Image (tube, rainbow, N blue to C red; front, side, top):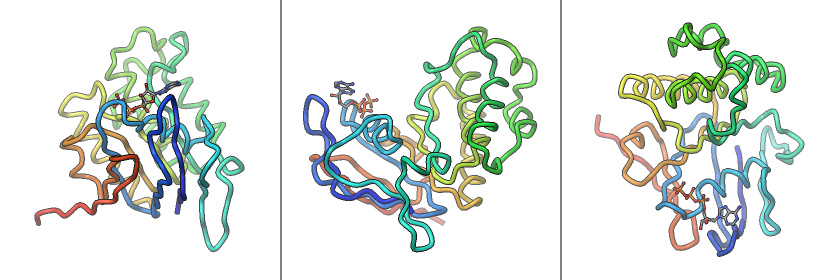
Length: 215
Ligand SMILES: Nc1ncnc2c1ncn2[C@@H]1O[C@H](COP(=O)(O)OP(=O)(O)OP(=O)(O)O)[C@@H](O)[C@H]1O
């Protein structure tokens, strides 16, 4: 599990105060809040891209407590397709992630190219991609990383209805692989139907809500 205890999140203002979060293996969590509440800042903090002075973030596995900074291959976070170098291809990125994270991929590069129908463009430079094409590469990187903890920031940006359904299938298959998933999205997003739990950021704290589905 990934555990956050007593975390303060501060930018120019206090976004969270003494917040706690527990992400258990094999569950999908949504992170819901209004614009500017601190969702991206929280994801950056969990992934070690920024530091907070107060609070702890750790992974607990088999009674061992691991420091996240020393177990980076267990977690994957790639915030936005705006981070891409436009002169590289989607395939360059998928191969790079595969060789850097060195876990057993949740899906192979070949499977993902076929899953997202990326055959015609995956070897072309990213500057020639549409927003949706870039997003499919980004989502594929998560599956190639083979990481146990996947943090997504607004993962459905640029996806059309068909691709959205495929994304839901991908999340279900990652979850069935015992992966822990946390993704931010705006309030009332229909995607929340695939979450088991939702963390709401409100009044500087995180509130856990269990999702009940109609059978
Ligand atoms: N590097 C930074 N320096 C100063 N303030 C920042 C920085 N990054 C974010 N902030 C501030 O922190 C607050 C939270 O921003 P953040 O991007 O985390 O919110 P968000 O919930 O992800 O927003 P959105 O839903 O619009 O994507 C905002 O007030 C923002 O201005």
